[in-house]
Image (cartoon, rainbow, N blue to C red; front, side, top):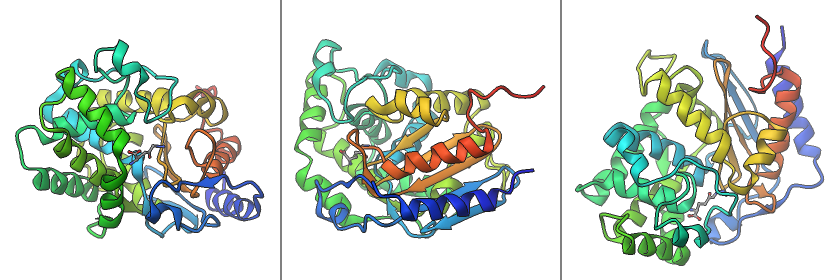
Length: 312
Ligand code: DON
């Protein structure tokens, strides 16, 4: 029987010493000032046991990791209709790329690219009010994590809004193709607010539990999505969760995972663990340098890769 607490503590100690920590995102001031020496890890098992180390209880900006929760909520609202407006293929391009949108008629390749997540935000808005949609998203994530302390960092949302010219271009371009029902400003308000969710590794791993257990929050027994939908969201995370670094993540880690430019990664070992890591320094593809290394080591020591042969 593996001693998970020991493995997690060892990995945090190794990450403290790591020489190459990547580069902290600096496109907005609230992210640029985050201390690059931070590292946190939280691993939650289906029986509810939690193994944490390092800065596991320090909130950070989850950024694009939130796209998993936004997609889950939007699928709950409109079901598979969503796939008429967003694809399910890896893009091989950067998270904020605009190039494929022209040849693919304003349909983003997948819901984790910025363009795809902006369409998802537009779907969440429906015909409703912007503030209510943002509130609904916050309540959803709090409910998944079972933690009312989770909040949206307004300074991050404002900075994203003030500097998000490329996202504005993506949104307007999709509107020109008829793939945005609401004005770009409103879809973007929802988008930047869910990206500005602040959560700790422990809260993030708790929020991801339903993806480890076929759609059910193990603690409460509440069914969030069907087992089929949980499986499919995991598949999208594996193939598209790290943008043009998704192949590398599958190769090195071998788990469904979603990264954010705040340096967080949510990874799911189906049936076994919900895992969150955080280290603010990013690699050249915008994914957490040490977060990925920590997950690689965790999987090497536990055998949790989905490509590992299972005993039978
Ligand atoms: O819209 C943006 O560019 C940021 N709010 C989120 C980007 C992000 O986290 C991409 N992931 N690595």
